[in-house]
Image 1: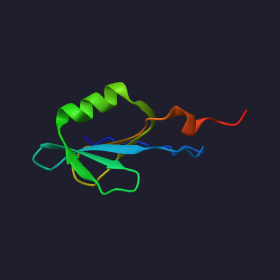
Image 2: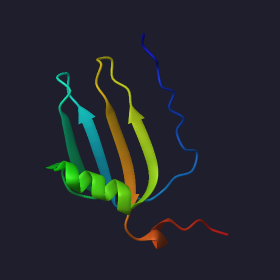
Image 3: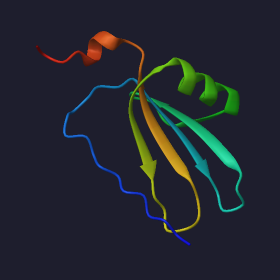
Length: 88
């Protein structure tokens, strides 16, 4: 049974420092990546990904659907909260 996840994009723009992504290829092996603003995507280890997920301020999460049975997740993190303050 296949379940399709619905993704609702945010109507509010935001600033971020880093994008972290995790994806599973068809064999099920997880690969983790980090992309900082203005740099290329680099492969990172599982521990660094988990540490970032647990410790950074996550401002958006984007599940990525693919036609094949693979899993992908991106989250946008910010290191400086003042960059993302909303006007009052």
